[in-house]
Length: 255
Ligand code: SAM
Image 1 (spheres, rainbow, N blue to C red):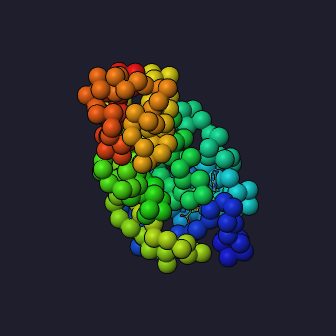
Image 2: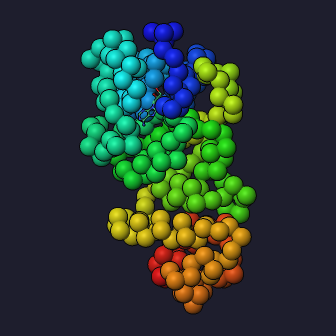
Image 3: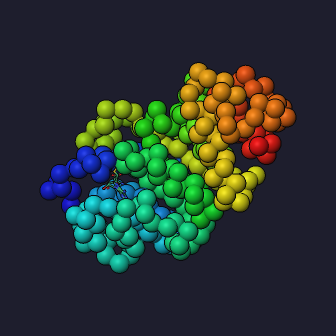
């Protein structure tokens, strides 16, 4: 397979071709024989073929019809293929929960995919995903860092995020312009569990970061009063990038 398929940019197709990198990802994931694994974007099966022998059940979500047909030919029924847009798959309805998520993600939709994973964070045990290094650094950034952003806070609200190792462009075909990183996400025990409160949290974080150079009081005008910000123990003159996830939770609770 593979040689006839012309990589499609619109599907973010950069196929892994370096066997040692593939091995390294699979071993970092530490799949156990009883595990159910859900792979996002199996492509030409680079990770899939290494995952199949080491887990109990493998589901893979692939949007590209040609690749899906080739995967069916290659792996037969052993692979449970879901031929759909991963953003539209209800991850709470898949079997084997909490399952292991894995994927060399299509970079053009990596942020919406991350939010999609977080919306279904109780369905998976952990995730091992390939992201652009820049995005990986953003989601793992410590508070106060220049990369610390809305995506950082949302990620760290839902999960502990850790960069495991970098992957150079040459490991892929075609080679992307940027370096990539493998990230491990482990869902946290959520301090805010009700879905509507989680939505309020997301709205608050979005508003707080609307303009990075503005103070919290300014960005949150009409959402939380200056007094309520102070009551949460936070100086309203601070900027969003200086607030930890816990600070944002305190803000939510004082609103
Ligand atoms: N796993 C393969 C590898 O490592 O060689 C392919 C990785 S490639 C970066 C991303 C894969 O995701 C492609 O196979 C692409 O067709 C698929 N894809 C793109 N958008 C998708 C979507 N919305 N839902 C599911 N799969 C998608």
